[in-house]
Image 1: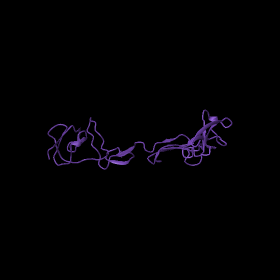
Image 2 (image 1 turned 90 degrees about the vertical axis):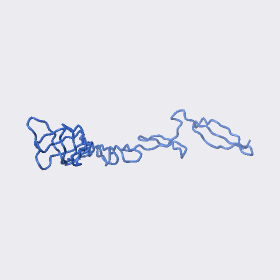
Image 3 (image 1 turned 180 degrees about the vertical axis):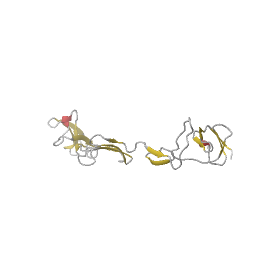
Image 4 (image 1 turned 30 degrees about the horizontal axis):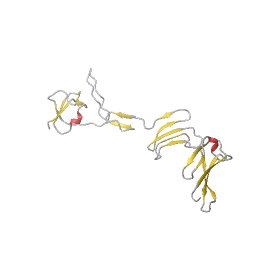
Length: 201
């Protein structure tokens, strides 16, 4: 009968075989379907150490693939962990957004290239420190700042001093964002922390 299908079990090969009927009543093998109830039903040629079994949807069959990679990498390729960038170098390297952020040498020395660090210093004139007082050192110069986290900027301006710790801006040099900053009074070398702001310029 044309269009009829018959399934038979091939005991020798452990597979289902589909037979299709033709218009003349003849039967022909149409397809072979693997019946997978254990790994022994998968027929792959000469498997060896270091290979994995995977399904190739395009080819419609199981295949073997060698596992020889030395790197774990993200989808766009810019973040990774590599254990062998050069042949047998025995160094672990980690990259974040294309920049090496981790380096472990063959003897275990660890370098974190993107770790926060900064070196700041006082430029030019000496800073006066009143007797029996605590002050913040004006670190207004930088040698390096890896993560751009240190603010060495210094503001200068004229302020009224009619209220303790409240900044009355007299010439537009200060702003409300300066609340919390340390102010140095150059007249008497005293220091205070700004707790309020008023634009009186």
